[in-house]
Length: 206
Image: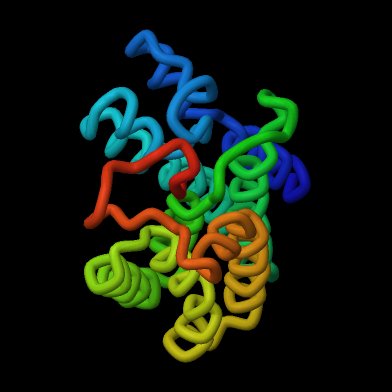
C-alpha cells in the first residue's frame, strides 16, 4: 500500500491547478507572461484572487496526500518516512507533471505545503524570512532561494527528524536547480524587482 500512496501522491501533485484555473478564466497561462503554471503568473494574467487560489491549491496538493498517508499508516513502524516520501512525490509531480509532459512549476508553494504539515514552526519561520528578503530586496526569486537554503537546517533544529531534514535538503536542491535562470540574472543584476517595474515575461513564478 505504501508504494501506491507514493504513486497517488505524485499523480495528485501533477495536477496543474494554475493551468486549470487560468483556463477557467479563459487564459492559457503557458502562452502568456512567463509561461509558467505557478501562482505568480496566474495572478499576473488572471488576477490576484485566482493567483492566491492557485497558491493554496498547489500547497494543498502536497498536504492532502500526506494527511491520507498519515491516517492510513497510523500504526506503521515507518510512518514518518512514508509520509515524507508522499510529500516528496507530490513535489516532484508539481515540478515534472505527467499530464504536461513533465514541464511544471518551480515548486515553492508545494514545498510550503509539505513543511506546513511536517514541520509547521520551521515552515512559518522560513515564510517570515522569505517575506523579509522580498520586502528588503524586492526579488521573489531571492526570497525563494533563501527559504530553500535555510529550510533543511530549520527542520533539523526544530524537529530533529532525519527523514524530514533530508527531504528539505532534496527539495532545496531541486528548487535551486529550477531557479538557474533567476540565479544567473541575480548574479548579473538583471533580475526584475517587483518594487521597480512591472513584471515581465522572464519573472519568477512559483
